[in-house]
Picture 1 (spheres, rainbow, N blue to C red):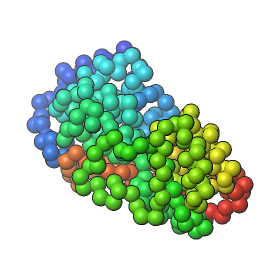
Picture 2 (cartoon, rainbow, N blue to C red; picture 1 turned 60 degrees about the horizontal axis):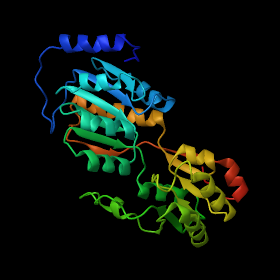
Picture 3 (cartoon, rainbow, N blue to C red; picture 1 turned 180 degrees about the vertical axis):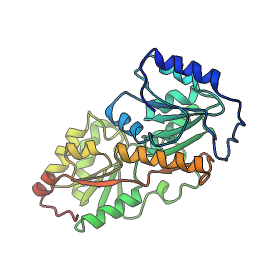
Picture 4 (cartoon, helix red, strand yellow; picture 1 turned 90 degrees about the vertical axis):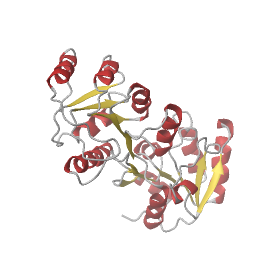
Length: 305
């Protein structure tokens, strides 16, 4: 499973189409798929996506090819990989949004995107039983429990989100859809009142738990958010490593390597028959807790190891 340079990659695709034997097509709702070939489609050709792909090398599959949306042959690979016994692994939100309307036969495993982005994608393009997903965000209940374990001094915790969810709550999502107890929610309706919302939340609570809502946390807003919460000496409990580097106290997140191992584990379970396809959708079970020691010292907050 290597990245193959043009034009050899497309020649390989044609060879695969001609050489593959005719095998029974596995049922969409279950079974142990016997993939003819697998395509890894990254949203961009960057180190995180490459690191995820590297974790899939131990899967004993016939062929796996890497490509990215910013490569000129991405469209050709998608059309070549649309078959009943094909699997397309989309890494990132943009790659899922590209694959969903383009594929009518292949199964799709969506990784490296938060639950909210996944829900929006299927709301836009339509859902299908051919689609499975591993969400990269850690459930809020788990992050809340870790926060209170690592920082005992934190009692009141705030969550700041954009306007009311644009999508209906998915049936059966349970507590996660309603949010855990012990959280005080704040809504920022417009970007120009965002900093005021963070200032108010900082005055009312002991810490702010960030969420993967790009209407709130994005490159335009993050510096102002960090400066505002720092002035109020209110720590940010982040959901990503980039927010930790920007000035959060701790981050509870899954690394690219962990996300790749999670996807590899699912594919091995499918191949061995330990698990069935059944359009599985779940959060990653792997994560790490990273601490920003400079922020901890500056805010004089003790974080348990």
